[in-house]
Image 1 (cartoon, rainbow, N blue to C red):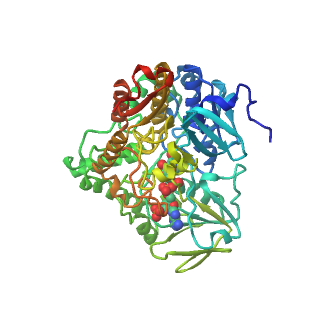
Image 2: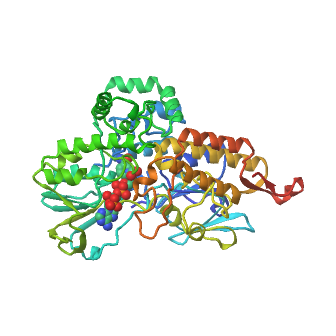
Image 3: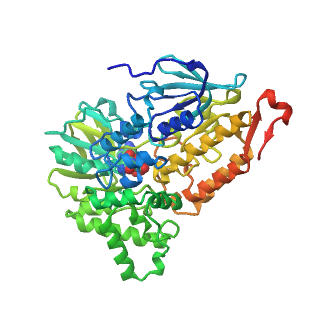
Length: 557
Ligand code: NAP
């Protein structure tokens, strides 16, 4: 493999900024800091190429749930004009092509070190620098450290007895072999029925001799109705870029559609049914936008939940399988709602079996397959669609140590604590793009990413203009923000999922905390702008010693 690392030109030991990750966030952050602020900045990326999530998640059926015309950067008219999506929902390979196109178009590769995994990062208080060491023993130093590591990039491998003894191929969907996996003639077992498993099952079933889906928790899913984009739609997108962006910026979830102001329970049953049917026929996440109160009123939510359960029972022919798939016990959309291409229909195929782990709990994995209480299922290939150590996992994996030897693991032992999801107390000049406490995963990700990257860029510009040595959040501001994040979640049904990766309960031992900010992207954008407008209210700004006579430490809380 050719060495794609940039040559060590200027002194990399004293960079202005280091960015970890070359996905959507890292690429744009590099562009902003280099081109808008003229900083010496480099990106460290563990993979051999750009793409982040879309580099690693190459499993069969991998596709984005955001509609393609909203799943791209909007900051550049040139990029918007030069790129055209082919389908309603972009598939993984096309998104990866898009991010490579952006990297080329903005000439980003020259400042990215690929094959470079961060092993640890320590804040050197005396030098006011982050010292970042890599798994292969190199060291980088920079004033600002920006994590652009994604929210769903640390795979969750379940601790199932015997997993390592499995004699066949075993792959986690989030770390899928680049050469693909040949399922032909194979008996495939798949664990996991979240967004990933629901996308993968129909495609695996088409290629395998047999697919057995082991379901622990049934899930809602809305049909995607994916299709090639028509020339008319592409033209409409080109001609309405500003309007599309304005809608994405004004909605709570950053998608290019508005949430209805109707209330489900204030709508007559026949009309409500007609609205659900129309949304079902249209497909996609817009189903969630049919009524204003679905995520705040359990009785309203029940109407959507029951509508979906009825569709599952209609589609799936075998009554026992239909019952197991529709026996869903969390309110609709309190876990991230998947959208699918023929998921429930897949269970009507002769070569697909559903194993309901509620009836027959999984006991162990054997070299020859999976054993449940009811017996052994012989398998050649195992697919783990078992999700991620979300949001905190990728950050804790960087082994960050802040002021006074405080590790992030210690600072977050009871759950993540941030100010605005952007900064952590005790970790000066560290910025976390789409960190816990920001809307991130509840939002169409590029919208959340652009806002964070632009806020961080403006903040760093302010620090440099004002001769500020370091910035970190005030403890009181962090406490208030943590409470705001909790209040925002508790104002919705989201915590009622009982068990979800939003709450961290999918990873044994992880503190149970609702991690993203559920108050909505538009509101959050306003809060961040206000904080900046008030001179970075809630942050400690420490002036350079040379400027200390101008007023000592600036406390902006
Ligand atoms: P997930 O939603 O966390 O689902 C993991 C699945 O694995 C669950 O069904 C879980 O069951 C099951 N599981 C975990 N450990 C298990 C065990 N020991 N035994 C049996 N089953 C086990 O993960 P995901 O499907 O990868 O999705 C994560 C997120 O990634 C999504 O919510 C979404 O935000 C994002 N994503 C997006 C797209 C897209 O845009 N198209 C596609 C894929 C993923 P339990 O529920 O019982 O724990």
